[in-house]
Image (cartoon, rainbow, N blue to C red; front, top):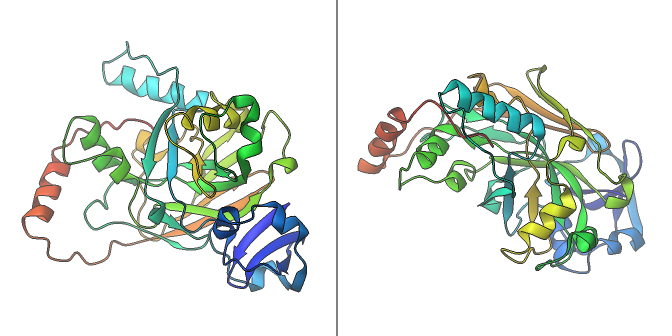
Length: 315
């Protein structure tokens, strides 16, 4: 089942390009998941039909309670990270054997077709990361991997946009910076265009993911390259906090993020993340808004970011 949050309400895509708007008293899929759950969308009556390209599509879950970002979860990306560390003169680095994760703000989500806004305080090193996102459907607390799939509402697409200069400061010990902040700016988590339920996917998951910037392919890999599968991630993360309906897990990005080639996002860029059997998430990058007066804090932020090392941690 393919489900959309739209300006007309929740809709099912029952044939390609045609949406059936459902008789459900919920504004979006996040509200549905926090209410009766995903099965209500299977049983709901259709109130009208509309072409997909004639309706405004929102993020499937516009305001998740929390977003959990998993780093270094593709073998290709792990290899890329080790190559970078070796080039920095640190060949002895070993990667973690357990999932590496950060919790970021749900307010960072933006819709398919929405702008990625470069923040005035960190506009120079903003990066893309195409990812598959898992949306939680039922509360999960310390669940076994074998039971994790029953807590999954479905999969969608995400772009884990990151301010690499702030991320670098956090990694090198700046107490005023954090990786969570680097990934939590408004519009830094494009999500969509739809939620596809687990019954639409084979197990183990093997989907092609590509990220393009202005039509240039930057990332191209398959989810069969995951180090930790979706069920394993749900199980692991649920040991640290209860995963609630509508929470989103970003499952990691493959080789090719901009930080490794120095190709950061600039105003006017168009980023597309394509995932097989889900669709395409497309967003345009816009210039940083005019900075407001923040006095000493703004100046301090810029001075510290200019002094940060040029190498960034992957993920």
